[in-house]
Image (cartoon, rainbow, N blue to C red; front, side):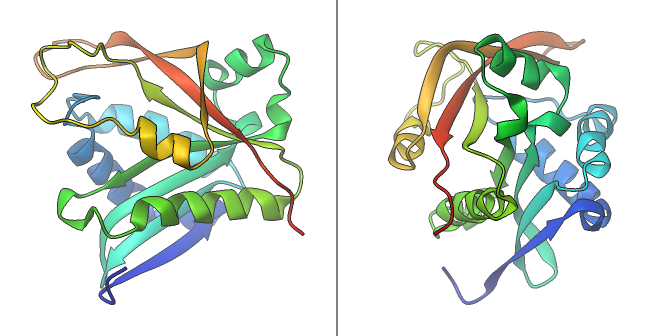
Length: 202
């Protein structure tokens, strides 16, 4: 990683002052394929309120000086909304045993510097230290391989996630709504979960 970058991890109430930075990053990064998110401050406030309410939420920030150029989040699944908890309960997985990863967002010019792995290392390590989780998980939006909006040369993150030990759980999905570019209202989108067993600290 470049010497100009540093990573800072914050938990619980300490994440509060950084919510606006994360909102701006989410709007900037998720505007691109595959999320095609038409940024909305109201949506961001509703989404991020979940993290302000959880005493064990986690923000991992990538900073260039004082500028936040990337961020990654995590939260006990039991503190997440019903839309995220229900698919696990439906498969007989206790949400109390799952640590959920929200997003990893990184501005384009800072990619390829090892921060993707660092974000996963930090979140998995935090979940392990909490001592009561045996699974880490996240979800990703579903897009067809022949989606005409897919940019030429676009590469999904599936290979990276599999190298990290995550398995796509086909049929285990959440439905969330947001407005895409060109839409005048929020519409439902399907996201599929990926999970990984969490080894306990030695």
